[in-house]
Length: 567
Ligand code: HEC
Image (cartoon, rainbow, N blue to C red; front, side, top):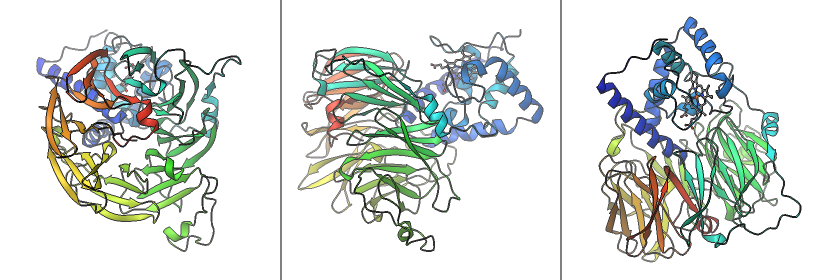
């Protein structure tokens, strides 16, 4: 068997750079990020797949069936190995896919095929897995139900934790590097347990209101319910083939999943039994959409849904008293304005001018602050904010009157999904990182007018604070030169007061302990770490090695919807 010829040195460097970028992007997309780089990658993927002609397509299919289907599924929807669909691979650069197929992934079951397949065959397969499966793979309600596994508690199982720690000061740390989760005692700063997760968790885990259970969503559509007290998986279900995130209702009764594939939401009870699926379609049934995200709006007793391809926001109420829905009042009156649909678990639509990609609630949950992304991207580098995208627009939508009430005066590309709010000079302000240019935008939430633009060394992705600390922390992880720097901002003066650095590494994603006294940040590398800082002196207190800890979630801050954290 011919070996793959060693690429010239320059190629290798490019491959490695791409691989590093892929790792970063995979981590970000797990947080719900979906921007320029992703679009670039999928554009190049389309170009290469378009060049497959019919005969190679046949041989690609048979190569796949022979060498790959046993692990990745005959339909490429995943099995022991992850799904290999255009949707799942959107952020995996073509060079990284080639590298993985040729060399495999160390310490995983993915074998290298350089000794079995020719370079041309590897090329063919790498292009093939970017093409849509025809006919499109389906994932029906029956498939969802059949995928469910449930492990009931033994009848005599006590409802007490297996560990001794403050159950409200636990951290769930998602380690994207080797697909594990660590449970951290936030007082002793020690790992209680570490367990394997599904491949590529996505969108942030969500807690039950009492903090006992945590729900994880994975890229390939799996939801896992895990008992933090008894340290075991309670239930698992595959909600879709490609999923964005999950939300848990404020009353703990419902779990809902947002899917790219199929274009649908799936609603479950708290033990992950399917209750209903919602097709993401326009009212007339003609347009369908990927579902970008779903969030719980607990004070409204509803889920709010962002759609990628339809200019609407949806609200699904889980309040049995919810008012009936009159779709005709919002849309064209000819479409049956007089026919009311039940409000409980029904879809209430708010029409928009443009789809909202990502959003943020104000503390009252009356307003959604969303960013609109331009649809087409000029190819350019995303480093230091030069994404090549046109201007994004940010807007405020009032969920009660169901329309846009203001434009937000933010230039560039605000990352509202990571926004935080806090009291400032008698009003409440929103502070949001900006993916374009190094600054934090601060907006008065009464007037929706800008208050300040706080300079940072480079564009950032996350921003966090806590009610009990005077500071907000943000990263500059989108910058090639300042990705290793966290900037600490005084919430009273809106001035940067300090930085902490981890030279040459990516330092990002901050979360506070329940009491706000410690700030935990991630060294976002395969051989990474969690760094614990004193939130008042900014001194490092402890460092725990972790495999690319892409996110960490404090039970108390999450279940109380702390104003310093996103949702
Ligand atoms: C023995 C099982 C097995 C076989 C056979 C196998 N894979 Fe994999 N593959 C895996 C596993 C497991 C992973 C996930 C590795 C990880 O944890 O990063 C994976 C990952 C991948 C990835 C990276 C996906 C991503 O999102 O990062 C690609 C691409 C891939 N495989 C392609 C192929 C192709 C093409 C073939 C056939 C030539 C193949 N694999 C055969 C198990 C397998």
